[in-house]
Length: 397
Ligand SMILES: [Zn+2]
Image 1: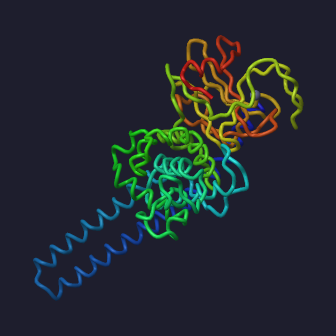
Image 2: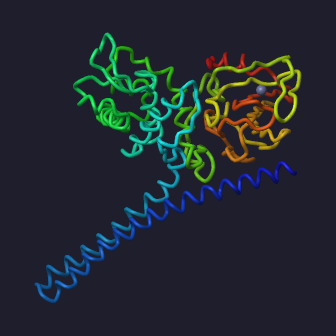
Image 3: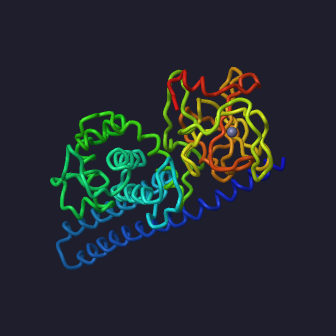
């Protein structure tokens, strides 16, 4: 009961935080609506004023036109408002100067700041979180997310995050993380337009933009890129995708393998299933047997994904404040996702989830010494080793 109360309190806290964000956004939308309405009203007033001085037919036509314009303006400004509120859930606004000193999937502070500029450049062009992630993935594959002031054998004149050559623009622009990312995204939209881009494999989108030798060069950077984007987007708004008030927003999708299994978190593996020496944590000692698979899962704030289609049966405190998300997949199969913080869990009991859907951020609640995902698979109530299952599904670590 206490756990349920705590979860409810955390949920309330989370919705309070979300409300703060929505108020700002709603105010911005409101301001735009008012500006549009004011413009339309000015046109009407001008037209009505003209009635007294000009030929009646022309002025009546312009008055009618102005009313139509007013309606169109209101519709245009109201319609995207709700969509914007939802899509924001899958990618918060990022201030590159406020990226904390941390490491995500092996990328340090300098690299994360550059990733934040890439995400910002994409957001400023109205590109969605998948497109943003493709940008980060490409820069990982080109420069390890560093503004390089040198090229390689193939392109001795290549520079910057995206290793852009002389024909991409002046050196100062290619060495600027925000401007060079903008150039990348312009080329991406031009070379791989919608709707094709949204279904084409990310590495192929990058390949057709960069025109590099190996079309699959960028593939291995997709998982770390999703972890980095998820973590950065969660800094100043709560990026908790695939849940909250926008359950129709898929968030950052995880990789799905064979037979419907998905990667619950990105690697590497920090600990396997089986007997293990007792570890002292701030909450107390761990058990001598490790019932799950420990994954780095992007470190603090990385994405946690549902390993199969199923229904969330419980979100509860498994002891020492360690939050557990339990998903029932039917036929006696259950999965557990442990250590996320209560306010960074985006699903609730009774909610249906899809394989690869983001359900939480990686945390360190409970018997844990650092952010990671502890993943368990239960068959008819007994914990079994998750690794052979994932490996058989083609999801290797
Ligand atoms: Zn563990």
